[in-house]
Image (tube, rainbow, N blue to C red):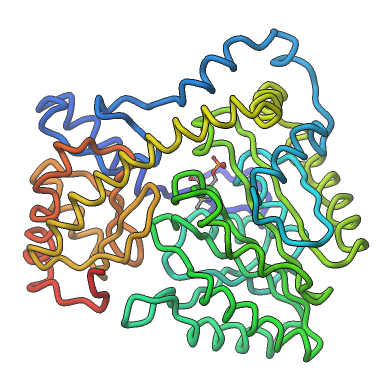
Length: 422
Ligand SMILES: Cc1ncc(COP(=O)(O)O)c(C=O)c1O
């Protein structure tokens, strides 16, 4: 075998089991007909016709933009109107007091990358939940960080504050600083969300360590927040970030992929919030530097679109209404699944909203394999099986819980795992 890559890069292969399952679903659809196949692997919202959906107000405005918006360079830090719009949408009416800035990034992925690069040390640990978007692992590994996880839920289906506290203490025994990533509300892959009380516990734990001289950065990944529920209710936790000590820094990974159905247009932002002006100035400088050296600048047309929508009350109202319709459809699909799961005794991670529902199992690959015999294609994750409610129409949701239960029982006997259904 001829090797040309640098020694440090050898053996880096992206293994994406969810994409592989998606390819199998497409093959099955070609063979048996689309109506026979449930493709639960997709992470984008599809309507009841199973076609990728675009929010109408986004499509109409995007198509009306002049060519110059698509071809002109943008500043690396992002257009000023866009950065303001991102900050407004991140917080809505729940903006905490403090210094705030935003850096445009290549989607939410770019925001997470910048946060890891600038707020964790090379060779050190970054902390997140065990139920997580598996790309966090790659994003950390790519730049020499080590992703550690803690158990997201306790045995009552609540955020596992004790496990979080233990993990933070453990890591901070060997490190002076720590980056914590929490994907909430509408967690991928579970639909779980931390309550305001659970957030208060998280911040209390961080404060204790800060008092002992540690520096803590918290990255809240809000990629799916647009479909998590009423916009100010799902953001109420953010108010707690006001007046945190200077050495607790909060960031938000904002994405236009889901909230604007612009997945391929690669627009997002990293938003920073601090009680210290210096921290925010440093954040903007670092972010600009990272952006310029990673992707240079992002899609100007997407930034213009968001700026236009956010500066017009009627357009905001229209967007809210259209998003609500998508969210209601997600809720109906999830309700069918959870109702049937409760009836047939299938355990699932408490779902509060968003694109995905997950079934805990240690044998996810075998369960997904078994499901394929019934032409159901799902993503096998380390903690369980992920079902993309976002892309399964209501009539295909019917009976799905029983099919999953059957596959689980076949693979592991009875489904009596740790997490209670509700
Ligand atoms: C949890 C989570 N965060 C962030 C992202 C980033 O998405 P994008 O880079 O398309 O904005 C995704 C995409 O699937 C995600 O699932």
